[in-house]
Length: 486
Image (cartoon, rainbow, N blue to C red; front, side, top):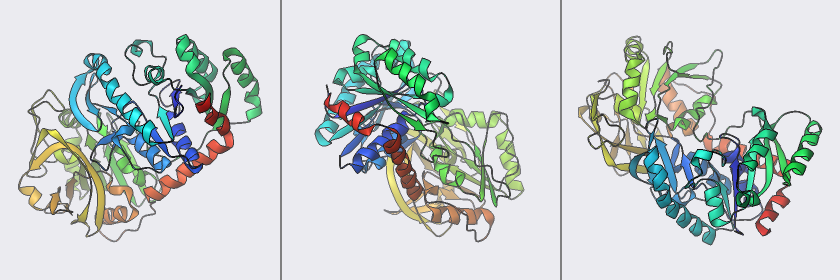
C-alpha cells in the first residue's frame, strides 16, 4: 500500500471532500509535513492559474494554499470544463487539448490515466504526503468502467481511502453502508474508515448509530465534524448564496448564465455588509441595480443566446438609460462587443453570433488559451490592480483604444466607454483585494466610496485555520495518520 497517499472519497457530490482535504492539508502542514493536494480528475468551471501558466480546479488551488505550497498543474492533472450538457473541454496537465462528448471521453479515460499516474508519481517523489480527493461518488455503477477519479485510481496505486458523508442531507448511515456495499471486495479493503460531516446537536445522541455502523461494516468512524456555519471558502463549482443586505449602499446584479465560470470573482462582494449582491436567474428580471455584471462564460455564444432569450439585453439598455453602470468580465466582456466568432468550434458548434453592440470591437475564439497572472494600473479608477486571465478569445476594435487597464509589459486590457458607464475586462479576481473593490465601487457610486469589505487572502487564511482547528478537535488525526503505515 502507498505509504505517502491518503484519499478522501464521498458518498455524494458536496459531501465535504474538498473541505476535508483542505483541512487535513493544513493539519499535516502544521505538523511539519510537506503536503501536496491531488485530484486525479475534476469537473468544474471554477479554475485557477498556476505560476507556470497552467490551469487547475479552484478546490485544488485552495488546498494548495492550505498546505502552504505553490500551485502546480500536477495537483489536478485532468480538468473537465463543461460547455454543454453532454460535452466538455478536456484539460491535461494544465493545457486544453480538445473538446469531447461524454461517450468519447469515457473511452479516452484510459489515456488520461497515464497523465494522472505521471502526476501522482511526481508528487509522491517530491512530498511527504499526498492528500487525494475523489470526485462525486465511487458507487456510481455506470461510471465504474475505466474510472480514474475514485476507486479506479485508488486500486491502481493501492491507496488507503476515507469515505465522508454529509449528515445534514439525511440518510447518512444508508449513504455510508450503501456506498461500501456497492464496492468490490478489493475496493472495500482499501476503505479504512468513515468521517461524518456537518453534524448539528448533541453528539452523544449519535453514538448508538456510530457503534452500529462500526459493527455493521467493520470500519472505524474517524470523527464527526460539526456544521461550520458560514464557512467562507472558495466554492469548487456550485454558485454560492447571494448576499441580500438591508439598507445596502450599493446594489449589484450578476447575470446567472448557464455556463457561468469563475463566479468566485464575486466572493468579496458577497461578504460585504454594504453590498447587496444577487444573481439574476432564469425567468427573473434584472430589476433595480446600481451595477449589472455579465460574468465569465465557458460557452459565450450559447450564453449570449440565453441572455437574449431572457430579455436581459433590453433590460440592460433600460438600465443604462437610467444611468446604471455595466461591467463585463471575460466572456461577459466579449458579449459587450459587436460579434463573437468561433470558427474552430472551440466552445460551440455555432460559428458566430451577434453580440450586444455596446462597444465597437469583435472577438474571435482561438485554440490557444490565454493563461496568466497579471498586475497593472486601472485607467478607470487610477488604482493598481491584479488578477488572472483564462480565455480563448482575442478581441480587436476601436473601442479597445480606451483600455480598462494597462498591464505590465505595456499590454492593454478591456475598454471604457466614452461616457464611463460601461467597462469590459478579461481579468478574473479583480475584486479579491479590498482596495480594488472600493475603487470600483466608487466608480459605481459616482463618488468616494468606502465599503465594509474584506481582503479575500486574509479571510481565506482565517477560514482555513478555523477548518483545521475543527479537524484537530473532532477527528482522530493520529489514527488518520496511522493509515499510511497500515
